Image (cartoon, rainbow, N blue to C red; front, side, top):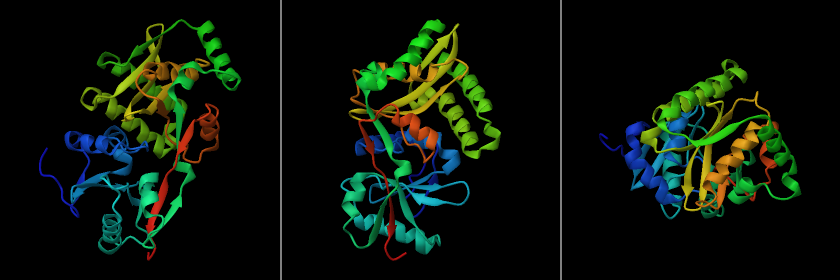
Length: 304
């Protein structure tokens, strides 16, 4: 893997880093969707992630396209206020940032720092993760899910389909579908969608090494929807990618239900990530009736 970077010296995140970083992230048992190696790898081009170790803590730095720089929450146990202050101060004094911050921090770190007068802790609703009971998404019980069941019934009546685990022999078809999805979403006009497609291509091409889990819906033996996920912690699966050909009415709720059913015996919860403040996406995620939201926070220095 090469030399291990020691703070304040960072290295760009690469596939070869998985061997070291994945066990550390898993040991942390995160509640927020960002903190898996596969998610970092998916978005590494957009955020240009770098990492280093400081006193055996994992420090991850994001260099967002457009100039934003922020830290993800330091990975270690228990939450460490002094270490957090050290790294934020370093970003201010050594990198010249006016507003150094930890972003996407979960409740664990926020609770530890909220009464510490060195920090300002602020909720960021746009980044809250939507967390559902896996059994609810697999069964869609009761009146509140009647619209979803209707969409699925329409789909099952209209199409002959099969659900199949994503294996290396389906990767090319999933890649082709992701490109179709991107064309329909006019990705050339949206940098974040372009970067998402690039990340999806990367994780699919490295599917075996990353040990991702996936499911696909095939219609006439062709992939028309797929989802990619993994265990986030001992009782939660996180879905990083879900794409479908919208020409097939009802295929999105069918994909969501089928992939939840795959996990129902292994994980109590499914994390479907955040809505980023997009009204349409917020309505869609709320329509599945989350069990709870995984809250996230911005943490800044009080003296900045």
